[in-house]
Each structure stands twice: as structure tokens, then as C-alpha cells.
Length: 114
Image (cartoon, helix red, strand yellow):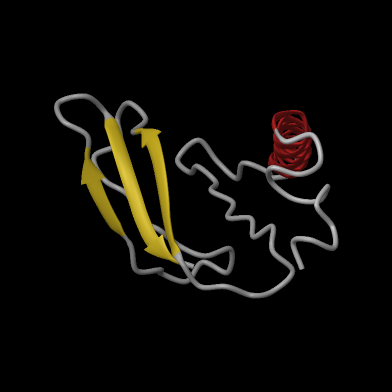
């Protein structure tokens, strides 16, 4: 196979030049994909309504075309005056989660399966 198409793949027809074209194309595509995903996430976040001063919304977005179950980690600063956290779904149902402290600061990490 390698003899049929020597100019395709790593170390192709012009070796280093061909390899660099592949690297450049990949990096450009990755940057563009990251920008599109960031823009979509920002647009989605702007649509979330805050229901009260005592609540903070967290949206989990799955960019895949299939359902998935995975551990979600969300790092945030615990708002002043809050002593704990009660995690519920959009239907007000309690949802199992674990909250870790981030040292002496108000930094926290919430983990749950979604």
C-alpha cells in the first residue's frame, strides 16, 4: 500500500513539508472547532434564567450526537453567605452529588454523574 500512494500520510512525497501541512491543517481545524464550541456554549449559557439570589444555575451540555453518562466536575467560588449546597434538577428533584472544599478559600468542586 505504501508504494501505491507515497505522497499520502506522514513522511509523504515531500516528507517534512507534507508532514507540516498535516500538522498545520489539524491545528487550524482544532482551533476552529474550539471557537465554535465556545461560542455555542456562551450562547446556551445566556439563555439560562437565574431563578433567585439563593440559586445558581449549572448547565451540562453534551456536544456529542449520542447520549452519554459521565462524571461532571464543576469548579466554582461558593457565594458569600452560603454554608452548603443542595443540588436539584430542573424539575426540583434532589440529585446525588459530592462537594469538595478547595482549601481555605471559598473555592469548591462539585462532582456528579450525568
